[in-house]
Amino acid sequence: VTTPTSRDLTVTEVRLTPILVADPALLNTQGVHQPYTPRLIVEVVTADGTTGLGETYGDTKYLDLAGPLAERLVGRQAGDLNRLFAEADAVAVDTAQVSGRVDVGGLRGVQTADKLRLSVLSALEVACLDAVGKSLGLPVHALLGGKVRDTVEYSAYLFYKWAGHPEGVPAEKDDWGAAVDPAGVVAQARTFKERYGFTSFKLKGGVFPPDEEIAAVRALAAAFPGHPLRLDPNGAWSVETSLRVAAELGDVLEYLEDPALGTPAMAEVSAGTGVPLATNMCVTTFAEIKEAFARDAVQVVLSDHHYWGGLRNTQQLAAVCRTFGVGVSMHSNTHLGISLAAMTHVAATVPDLHHACDSHYPWQSEDVLTERLTFENGAVRVSDAPGLGVTLDRERLAALHRRWLDDDGSLRDRDDAAAMRVADPDWVAPAVPRW
Ligand code: GKR
Ligand code: MG
Image (cartoon, rainbow, N blue to C red; front, side):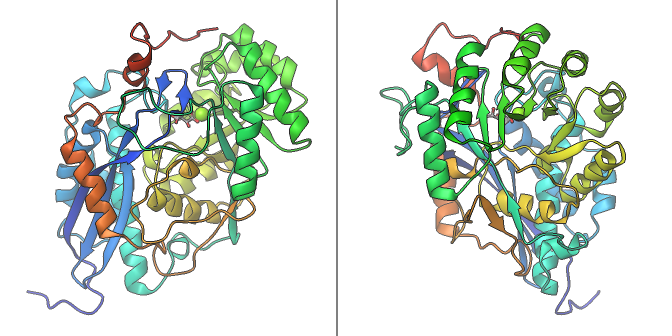
């Protein structure tokens, strides 16, 4: 029997709390965001009484895995992560969940058993790093080797958007208004700039015919001359359309993100344009890197520490990208402040980060923290407080968990196409390429 010391980092308990968080009516190629999105909040408790926080996707398929993976963490040292990851392969995944399909609500590439596991492990890893950091009095970036910058720049993530969710659908109100044309997109960008100081802008495309989205990007270029702009239709275009858009917007785009779906199509686009291509859809695992880089299909990989398997894997991805002269930046999906803090810590440690990272955080009016993270001049200051530097608000967590408990199950698995069918009963997520 060992006596716990003041720094006993043996994991004694892992608490898993699924929640539903308010999400505005943001449009993408699959449909529209649900009024509430599932997330999973992880708390790792160690024998010295420290609690570390993590956050990841909260759909049922992740929850199903989170229990068995959390069990494997209990009794280990919070710093024993490499072995946890190695042994996690043994945790079975329901194969019906991963039939090689594109993960439609999240639009983040082909779903695999590994990716599901990694998405859950990422939250356990972050929570362990938070606990170790808190216990040792060190920020997470120090555990990752130390920050190379004091602030991390983010881009304004512009969405075509309805003013609200369809009539009769329970939802929280937001004050962003609608954005369904170039003028609406520019107005949204101005609000982003006024509220948060963002200077680079990404438009989620694949919603309207390409000419309308070209017009929106042109309007942004006219309203914000010289500011970096990106357009991301989530693979909705053919190679031909992608090349046409690249030719029409080449003078104003920082990069074009996933114009076409999959490495072969992206490689064709890449061969026909000088506009850099970025992806969070065709390079989403280490196994996908070789073909994509060998074919020069992408010039920027957008990492997402959730499905890449955490902060240390993100650093490894950045090193591989650096080796091959490929840029790296960060993808996001609907997320709260724990994830933003984790993204900021790891981004602070990546030497060659030359593009502002994506974040959905300004769209989330709710959080589970006592204090929200803030953007100043479009950037988040890297915290030097122990761990992630964020504090859980238990009442907020309980309230958002209550919403999850009260749900009849219809919102627990994000389904943007189903949300769209409320407004348009005939809607089916379009086949790609749509245009
Ligand atoms: O939130 O609708 C959305 C986005 O389309 C998201 O699901 C994507 O994963 O942000 C993502 C992207 O860059 O493709
Ligand atoms: Mg994308």
